[in-house]
Amino acid sequence: MTLMFNGIGVSKGFAIGEAHVLLRNQVDVAARKLTKKQVPAECRRLRKAIKIAKAELLTARDNIPEDAPSDISAFIETHILMLDDGLLSDTPVDIIKTEQCNAEAALQQQREAMAKVFGSMEDEYLATRIDDVNHVIDAVLNALVSGEEKATTENWKGQIVIADDLSPADTVLMQNQGVAGFITETGGQLSHTAILARSLGIPAIVGVHNIRQYVRTGEMLTLDGKLGLLLAEPTAAMLSDVRKQQKAFRQKQRDLNKLIDTPAVTQDGVSLQLSVNIEIEDDLKALKRINADAVGLYRTEFMYLNRDTTPTEQEHFKAYTKVIRALKGAPLTIRTADLGADKDISHAHVASSGTMAHNPAMGLRGIRLCLNEPALFVTQLRAILRASAKGPVRILLPMLTTVAEITQTLAIIESVKEALSEEGLEYDEHIEVGGMIEVPAAAIAADQLAQHLDFLSIGTNDLIQYTMAIDRVDDQVNYLYDPLHPAVLQLIKYTIEAGQKANIPVALCGDMASDTRFVRVLLGLGLSEFSMPPNSLLAVKHSLINARRVRVRRFSTALMKTSDPEEQASLLERINRS
Image (cartoon, rainbow, N blue to C red):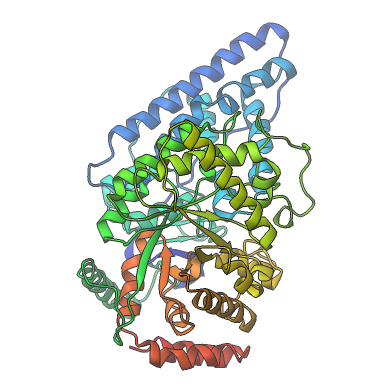
């Protein structure tokens, strides 16, 4: 009998193969009281387990194929660094000593403490970095049980792997062995498994709860990584249909690669700028593969997390100049730190009340925090300005709501310029400063903000959440997350028109810019600058260069006037018709 399951499709493509169900043993983390004499030996046991876990990661890193995407190496390097970090190498040892408990319980206690911090973060990407913590702690827990480095005997070639979750090290084995696809019980669009699957081009579905209770190793499966659809024991007719879709998908991917050097211009002559969003330096390799125009959003928050002190000016400067060199003249837009009450910023040089905001999304974050903590802000601004002497750089300010915030920021930037001049340090005197429009108030007042800025960038992820008053990662309300809601489209339209009126460029760097269902809607609203994850760019280019703005404009206008789901679906189908 055929069974059908639905999850979150996170990596497009079709897979056909036998199931390989991973049922890894769960480590007992129950607390056991130790005698004082037992504590030193337990501390040594934990340190040995950390060494074993690190050795396994080093082995995985050394076996990464040279042509593998850089994301894999980056994630594994992150895990290696975390094992060296005091939060995982020293704090659990301190817990063993102070509470006289076993290593498993100490690790679990630290896991729970760190989960609270990451779980309270408003930024979805940063919140899902608890995946890193869980993968690393699980590796140490397994080493505590085995007491030695485990040999890998699993063979996943041509199979569809089903697991609770998969680590970056698992993904290396997948790459080496030619896995057909995978399904996990946990995870979301921004989990590691999702990011790596997209980077590798492996069809994948996440969030299929309790799937391992219903599927057994050896059963035939088909997987649709776009729709998030899994079929167990499909009929012959179903298999034939999936094979046809798989063949068509592969041909489409080959066709998309032919667009790498094709100019980004619509059928009626509208020139487009297609940029990418990056998190880490290794993302630049993907940027070069697809020949993107620029980096439209460089997130810098990762530099502040998982450390006891704030990053120094030199650390900032080195990170930025590496990216600038790699871009070879292409523009780089650096977003200043979008930290806040929802992220752990209680470093030695940053004032903090020590309490979590009741509603972090509405709290002291983004530009509000930077203006409240000028020492933190000035350190980053000095580095950005110094880096601007090495290549074209723009400054992007997050979470703007008022003109006063812009005025204060520009005054600080001018004072930093004066200080650098006095020190004889070079910088771009005409560096452009832009603002993110991610709050409804900022969109409505975009014409006022635009008078004081050099460019605008729309962050639709937050803009939609704030407009709809919902958290899109909350399963109970995320059905209300609607990019096509008339209010959302109107706010985007306001912002684009404000930029046109002020004669400054307007880009969009949220998820809507990477979703081929919506990019023609945005084109019809007047947008011509899109910034997205590197893996989405060619599909977006294909959609846009085969469109005519004069045609799609009327459908976008109609979408702003309806909230009827059926009418929305009909208009969206017509706007995306080839």
